[in-house]
Length: 231
Image (cartoon, rainbow, N blue to C red; front, side, top):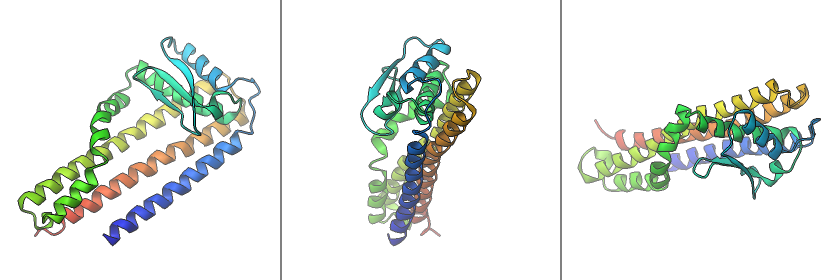
C-alpha cells in the first residue's frame, strides 16, 4: 500500500502544480483586455451564430473555472469571471466551451464516444479501487478463487475510467483548436490577445493530460498487484 500512497501523492502534486499554473495564467490573461470590447458571453453567442447553431443558450454559472458545455440541455455554462469579463482569458474559455457545442452539433465522434461512457463511469469510477482492494483482501494475488474475479471486475471498472480520461483528450484539444481557429479567422482578437488565449488553453488542456496519465498509472499499479503474484 505504501507504493500506492506514493503514486497518489505524486499524481496529486503534479495535478496541483498544473492547476496552480492554469489559475496563474488565467489571472494574468484576465488583465489583457480585448480591443473589441466583447464579453465572454458575447464571444460565445457570436461563435454559436457564426456556426449556425441557434438552439444553444449561453448562461452564467457560479464558481471559478467552472465553465462547461451541457449537451443534455444544450447550454454553454460560463463562470462569472468569464461570462461578464472582456479579456483574452474570457475569450479563450468562452470560445472553447462553444467548441464543444460545435462538436455536438456536428456529431464529433470522440465526443459521441465520451458521452456514451458518462453513465457507466459515473457509477463505477468511485467504487473501482475499493472493489480491487476487496478482491486482493480475498486472495486475488494468488490468481484463483472468488477474490481474483472480484479484483478483475474492479480493474475493468478502473479501465473504463482510464479509457474515459484518454477519450477526453482529443475532445478537449479539438475544442481548443476550433476556438483558436475561429478567434483568428474572424479577427476577434489581436495578435497579442490571440497568444494569450492560446497559452491559457494549452495549460487548461494539460490538466486533462495529467488526469489521464494519473488514471493510467493507477490502473497499471493495481493491475500489477492483482496479476503480479501469479506464476
